[in-house]
Length: 246
Image (cartoon, rainbow, N blue to C red; front, side):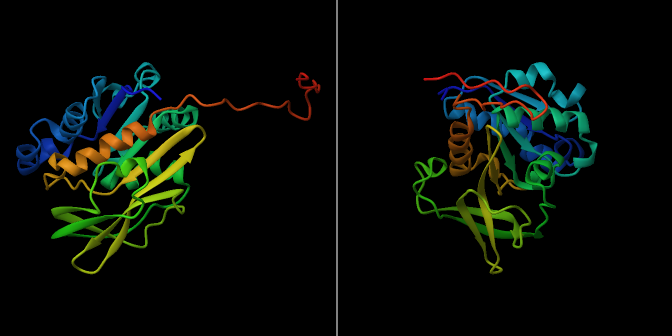
């Protein structure tokens, strides 16, 4: 595994431009804050891309040079080109890691990878969020205490319509009594996917030290391992060739 993977931080970058309050909170965009947190944790090959760039900043050339892609979207999921979604999907299948952040649960790429609606319950509030570490042995939980407290966050609640996670790292609790599967790990093809719940645009969540640590840990976990490639057997219509003897 590459200890310094090539990271592309993708953000919609619409709330920051349309809302003075969000723009003041994230003057470099939420994608800029996520990228800064990754650099803070020692990653040096970090680039950003946004929705309104040509091809959303996710050209074939950019994705070919991306080991891990982080994705935040909310107000413009439908504005994302299907061609770009298919391109990202193919790269995940090939081994690129994908971190899906907060409201990107409803992004085209996450729904395509999950094969479900990815719907959930939610309410905007000033709740505190406590994310309990339910798998302390997982690499994404490295260096954390038993839980993460976030002073103010939007509430997400069950039922979260996603496949059962292959590993569940965090479960959130809110003062309204709701709980939510907030740190879900999946694999698709050769790629690893991590969904991480916190990150509403009106709160400074991406400056939170433990949130930044989780994202950094998740990037390390999701980076391609360059493991064995799939053996492609001939189709029934093709002439059969015996495998070489050992």
